Length: 290
Image 1 (tube, helix red, strand yellow):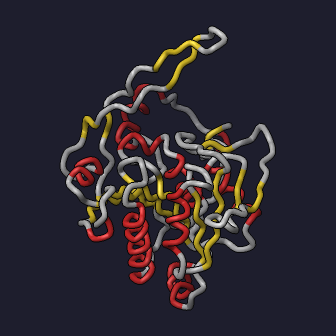
Image 2 (tube, rainbow, N blue to C red; image 1 turned 60 degrees about the vertical axis):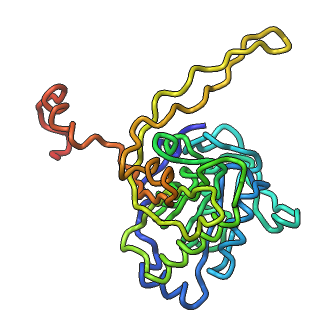
Image 3 (cartoon, rainbow, N blue to C red; image 1 turned 135 degrees about the horizontal axis):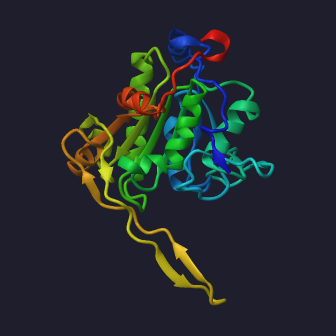
């Protein structure tokens, strides 16, 4: 597997409908919403999110076959992917991909769906995706895949694991999406990362626009011995929050608010460019005259 950021050409064009077109589609009942996750197609959070989006438009669910938490933006390039349609009562009609969260959205957008969606929503994840977690999160990566194709995208997560008060988180997800559609979407595609406290009143909690906090380094790996006598390693737990001051996602959720963080993909350290030019650039003309 490789990062989908490494394997991608330039596809971040504006949505072909345009902002007015998406709003008109919603008002006319012609919205198309793609839903994915990283916990796998059987996860309660996916079913809850799909049910919450009902009535807002035409729904397509395309999700990984297995739990793929922590796979970030990985695309599967070393084997073919298969797709089947789920038959379970709660997952009836879900399309299931034998790959990663990014695979699921990528396949959906590049050949599986007959029409391009107007919005991508992912989750509802079991556990927070805050601070440094977003770099590893399959939930955020699935939403990012839509964003990289020029489609507005929102990733939803519950702060704690266990699916407690999932119904309230689903109500919050619907209310937020509905509000955005009724207000009219921003001019450019966006990527929002939403973290929801596990509370029965989650849909009525304050909402805060936040920045990502930071965590301490992860705990050490857990070393064990397999039944065959081989030493094996488990990745250790995530570190505690170390930058969790006012304005961060950690701060908001710790104070019973829904955290909404706008994300971007550009990893360039723009402030450091002049210093690095002074250190490492070599003067001289470029081929082609540019």
